[in-house]
Length: 337
Image 1 (tube, rainbow, N blue to C red):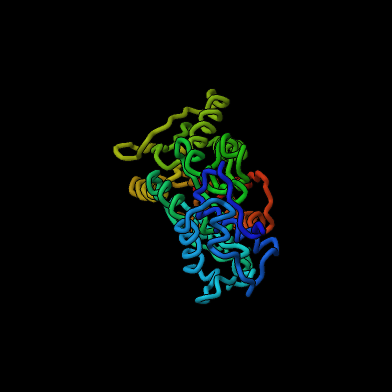
Image 2 (image 1 turned 45 degrees about the vertical axis):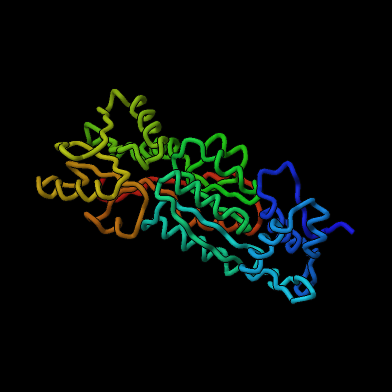
């Protein structure tokens, strides 16, 4: 009699042993199998899906290692874990960990309300590490939350994962939007709107710089800045520089600095030159943290709401929604502008 618990297809790019694992998880979620139920024998699964005994044993051994199933000598295999433990097991892949990612992570965990376990990984903007982490964890989780950063073609790597289990976080692109739900930032729109909302504060300055190293920073930051510069070219001078190293700051200039090291450097140089921050020299940072509320009597920031981003992501994972949600962003006004 055919098994309703396991399914394997020949046209899938997912290895067959992982298909067995994934289909058992799906059967648990659907209520087709319960704790204590005996599973189909290895021989019957081999026969039904034309699999080798080694393939099925690899799947069963992995399920045993995770505590999902147990075996009784001479009798067979049984479902061991309870449903809630398997309901949501999240693979969370960040590019790096910093203060605002910690705010996002803590908000995500809190919003899951104990209904999921989360394993966090980091690819550190290394595509090889990104690829290895995806490949090594395929089939081990019920949800995959991915920060793909600026990789050229992340979909080529992500498509090996079950499409309905993947959620994109922070940066996305046209291809990823076609395949996966996301809670993301629109960096081009965000910087343009933020600067527009601060026109009354910017008018005291003569020249505006974007410090854009171009490694980790989203391309949309550059695009949005240039769009704003083109619209206001008669009011201010604009320039994009890759680094503050060797650059001489002057009065009546305002700097947009995505990197916190550059923010600190500007504060130090302003103090050394006795420039009044927020009057003679403007500083706009990216991504708000509690520390920026007090540095130099308050650093103006362009920032998304990381707490809200974590909450929206948790709702999406728990509810299985398949939306594309652009997280809000604003210019938070403080003394530095």
